[in-house]
Structures are given as C-alpha cells and as structure tokens.
Length: 281
Image (cartoon, rainbow, N blue to C red; front, side, top):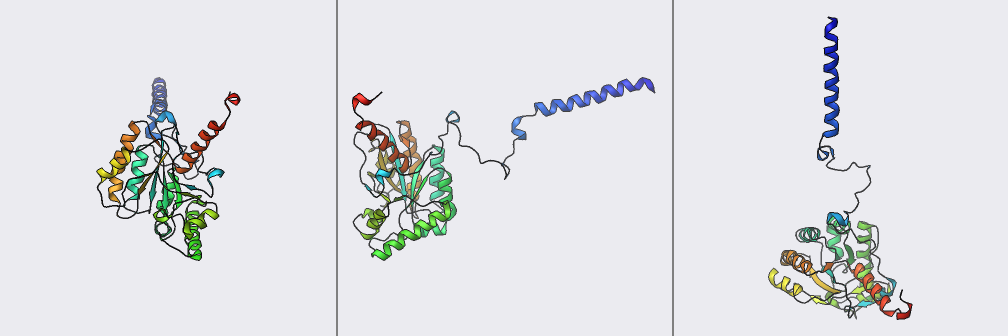
C-alpha cells in the first residue's frame, strides 16, 4: 500500500496544476461580466484610441451668448464643426433611430424638445442626455402666439420637465416657427435663455423624401453652421436621411457637436482673433 502513495501525490499535484493553469489562461472575455454590478463606478467614455469621441466636457453656454439670439454663424470660422439640431421631439418611433445614427458616427447633437412630448416620454429625454447630447426647450405646445402669462407657462412647464428628467434646467431655447419678436421668445431672452435659430434648413418640415433632406444638408454647409432638422412625429424621412448626412459630411472632415460646444468654439476663436499680434506667444 505504501508504494502507491507517491503516485497518488503526483496525481493530486498534477490536478492542482491543471486547475491553476485553467484560471490564468481562461480568455478574459469569458470572465468579464456582461453588465456592470450596481455598485460599480459608471463606465468611462471610450478613449479616442478606441475610435469613440468622448462626451462633451461641458454643456454650459458661454455668458456672452446668454440672453442673445443666435441668427447666423460666425464669419470666417475655420473649424469644420456643425451643430445638428432636432425640433419637436422626442418621439418613440423617430428619436431612437436618430440616436442610433448619431451613436454610430460618434456625433453629438442638440434636441429642442417640446414639453408635451417630454412629459409623455421622459425616458427618451434621459437617453438623449446620457448619450452626450444637449437637451433644450422648444416650448411646451409649440404656439405661434402667446400672452405674457401663456409665455411664462410654456417656458416654466417645459423647463420643469427637463429638470425633472435630467436634474438641470435648459439654457437654450428655440422659438417655435423661428418667431423672435413675440412674447414667448422675448420672455425667454429676459430669463437668460440663448435663443437659437439656424443657418441651414433641411426643409424637412415639408413632405419630402430622405434623399432631398440629405441633399439639403450635405451640399450647403460651412464651418460653424447650425442645421435644422426634426425628430417629432411624422419625421421618419429625417431619420432615414441622417445616416447619409453623417456619413458624407464626416468623410469631408466635418465633426458634429452640440450647440454649447459650438458656442464655446466660437468664443475661443473670436477671443484669439481679438488678441493683439504682439501679445500672442
């Protein structure tokens, strides 16, 4: 019986070694959890080396633009940045398609949401912000005219819904129909909102196909332009046009940023232009 002890010991040792080899050589992918534990830190944005553009560091609007109307792009702005803006959403059919296309092209955008839609689909508003996009106000019910009291109500209700979803109040406002001289826009300006119009319209408010919408965006932009699109109900053609817009303009060197990012870039460039030549390093 004694002569079998070394053999048994040898077998036990080999079994232990085999288990150890299995632990250190097992592929990493098979032990990585599919979903991070609830207590784990939130995932960090993908690094540029991974081919993903990180979320904007700040969505604050520079002070110089608060209480102002943005009607046109800065002349001679050199950086190939575009601000895609989407009005009238969110919509459960259209907005997810828009978000998917933006994510596939590492693009950021600005969503001017209607309060009545944000009330119905707050999860979509949260998804917009979680993906690094800017969320802004487009009024509650999209009126063309309001009394002063109605204007305050339109702004207050929408702001409260956005704050409830995101934890912060919107700083940007797009007046319905681009009307800036009515009570709604003027009240927003007095409250410090930046009223954002657009410099390029895709004309997607009209019953046109995705090819025409894409053409209107692709063949007209200049660096620093603000592009008007829609992700509200009935705008499936806009969602279908977006991948082509993103693909073709990205190929020419354009990057897609939020409105706060674009305003920050404008401010940096204008500050550099105003610096005397002798003061530059």
